[in-house]
Image 1 (cartoon, helix red, strand yellow):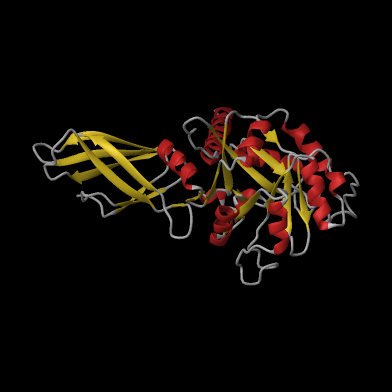
Image 2 (tube, rainbow, N blue to C red; image 1 turned 90 degrees about the vertical axis):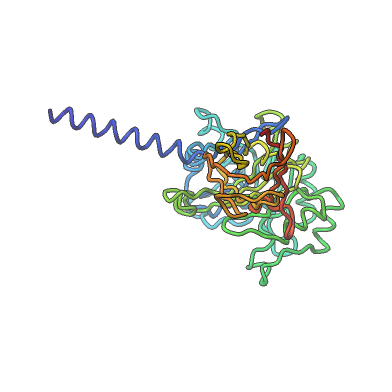
Length: 368
């Protein structure tokens, strides 16, 4: 009997662990014409100033259900070099590729160019050889990344250690990088911060909006995954699940950053992910009344905050409605004997941001 109890205990423990792994996997639906890939493009290990070996980053990413990551070690900043000497700056990437083989995880070759402001810190992705980026001249290192076909984005432009006021702003050097096509993206989200100014710069300069964890310690601790948190990621809308397709999507700006419950990016891509995440279905009128029941279904990990801007009021809710992840909510719409076979509902999606005080609108036609 005792052995039976032990077996039941371990079976239950295994089921709990599997359930936790499933719950933490980041889930967003594909959008019209594209696959929605979840990526974290700014990660560190002990091969620069991180606290873990590359295999831990692989395990975390797999448990989070990510499609791709990039281990972007600092090229110049090597605080562990006395304990872990590695003259080959590609070593972290090589270990990650080997560790990822048993898993369905894409590893993008990247590195972090670490300089004082300007230009500050930048990540170069899809590189061929990180060692060739060990160049003292700041402009020439970006030129070498360009020769390798890299997608380069500006890291934490609001970082208070380089911007005491926490405000992201362009410098003449960054304008030169954009002019030469050496800079292609900017972090609007880094770790625990969101920069409204960085999003405005992305729009103004034609830069791709990026959201990253910039994780140095453990993802579980930093983002309190046990309490329902999640790491920031970039949702990349790619034609297929491949490194080349991710690269094409980044260069074309097909991204949305997901941070806490915020979705941040260009309006056209916000519109697509919102339309794929939320569905509205008529459940019929309540008895002989003109109050229409509308079921809203959210099949994503984002909590949607909708503000009713329709001509119709809601009987059960205020004009602010929260739609929890992977849930249904029944709205009771006072149609006021509106004629016709359909009614039109309109919402402002408050947790989606395309610019300063700018939120996408969601217009839905509902059959009565």
